[in-house]
Image (tube, rainbow, N blue to C red; front, side, top):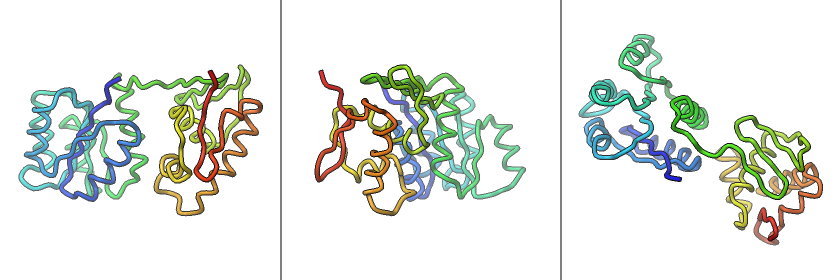
Length: 226
């Protein structure tokens, strides 16, 4: 399935990279623009942009001008980023047809969650929400896991860990890679914390816990035989 394209527009390269990194991890394709003019050019040159994340304060054309220009031709979802906590800005944004309004500083995880919510609301995010393998069924939207038809109660991190294993079946995953994707930038501790979570997860999965193979000296691999 073709990845959904998101255009990230901000004159701060560090901010673009931070937002882009989080979006790429969620399997979106990211395009970047460093000013308003570049954003408008890129939008009209590129087919099927699913959503725009747009900073207000930018050189050449500010976010409001970009929004006005794009709204003349398209109803693509737009999330506005601003450093101001000004109600007038927020009202102007909604008048221009902005779908969401987020003030800086913000949590990239919250931003990505808003992106997913808007894309689902607009019917664009058709990403698979139910994963199945080896008798395990995981419903990402409902946050439910069953093993051989029986419900299993997992903690938030155990759920995310199992999701990552199911999405990467047959792939050897290092502890560092798992930390990076499941714990993101939040965790600055020993990668061995994964061993503890895997042990608990295996226990809760019962006999199906054997599908999580240990790769000595490296990490783990989720694999269904045959």
